[in-house]
Image (cartoon, rainbow, N blue to C red; front, side, top):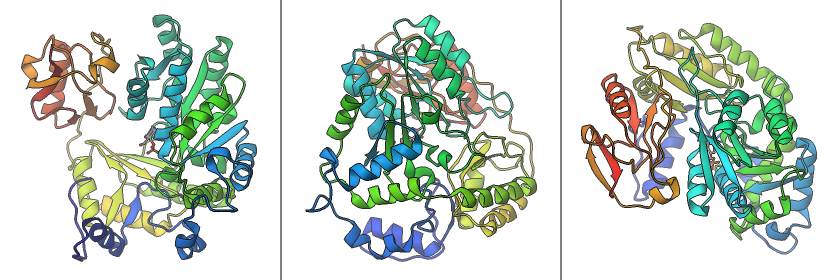
Length: 462
Ligand SMILES: Cc1ncc(COP(=O)(O)O)c(C=O)c1O
């Protein structure tokens, strides 16, 4: 995010350590992942014993790949608490769980429907494992202009358009804290014999309080993957996969997960995950909700009403500065947030935050001048024209040409305007006059477009 600004400066010969030392010395107020918030949520026993907790498969410890001892027991306790048939730690983030799901679909010769703004690991998995994939369009929130989660209506529409779909993957919650109606979607899909996967990367904390949305696995989802490092007291890369047997061959799926997992599993990561999932944080969340409500009441800019109250989205479209400029300014004041776009700030909050953290943020936001409303261009829903299969297109040679010469050519990259962060073009799709007109408009309005090199775009060389 922006440039690196440190209040205190230490110099050493070790570039990464140099950065980390300065970061640690700064003691910034963090509203971003990982959820432990600069170690605040890590219990002192972990800090004190980090070296001796960092074992791998020594005598007496279990074997991740054929668990029969402590790992098995730990996972069984978690499955019971989560209400699912089987869980397995993911030691390389939700990414590895999603890759395993895409391999599973491919082995089962299935076709999967995914939202157009699915995480990049979904697309990468399809490309790596030659998984047949189709997209469902995503709508933007009428009031906030940010992506909505996939709805039952959109799924029904997509199933009418694309035949032989046997799997659907939904991102719920979205990055912006909105959830799909998983219960109705899973009932509808199951009646049709379709399997539901939910990417709950941002919602592993939902189990801790009834005022948070209900966890997808408890609403009939067949397989859920979630990142514990994003919102809980776990180290980066910590994630877990939960599954139900009824419609999925869990033995095969978990075998795939294991084959994508290191043979040196980190017991430190697993132990922190077990602690995060099996502990009771109910009261801690109640306290956090009160603090968040205090923040919302006192925030000089509107806060979007998300389904997950802990994901704070501040609408700064009426601030004089852009969201990105505000994020840079906050960084200079030693406050780091999760993400900023032209019009929004995204904050991750956890029970590790104290009221004083929010007060510091409020003080800075209160100093900001109001300005002209930054109008966001309505996000168009183009019907994509896939000329070359996405999996083939990704590995074809590309060349870079000027935007205005790209009409009728085939896209050799992914083009994503921010906001809303929904891909406008994918590898292998035809670039139309409408695309170019829209990209030109958003560039003029000051919004960011990922995948472009100033006014140049990558096309497939044919
Ligand atoms: C929606 C979504 N899914 C999956 C992932 C991947 O998670 P991880 O970083 O744990 O691999 C992310 C990460 O940003 C995400 O936002």
